[in-house]
Amino acid sequence: MNGVYTQRYNRLRNTNGPLFRSRFKAVSVESDVYLLQLTRYIHRNPVDMRTPQVIELATYPWSGFPAYLNKSPSPLWLNGEFNYQSLGKRVDTTLIGVF
Image (cartoon, rainbow, N blue to C red; front, side):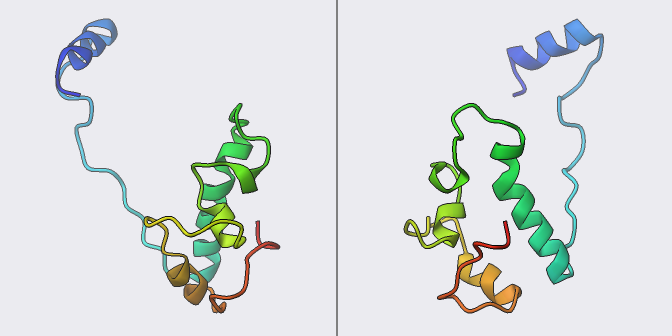
């Protein structure tokens, strides 16, 4: 993003330099309650933002939520076992009531 788009953005907004000047903000997750809130936020975001193609979260193709419900295989990027164990759950249970 350091090319033509950045130049145009800077010109239109009368700014200069790169679009992203500093590192992203990383927040430490230190409690089960916060982990659950973050997991809920991430998975519910398409529904809460009223993304047009989301009719039901359990069928949304770009979410790990169906895997948490054991309705689809877990994608490679989703470490559901870690999340279950972090919340004190067994891997063979579902988080259906959590969301």
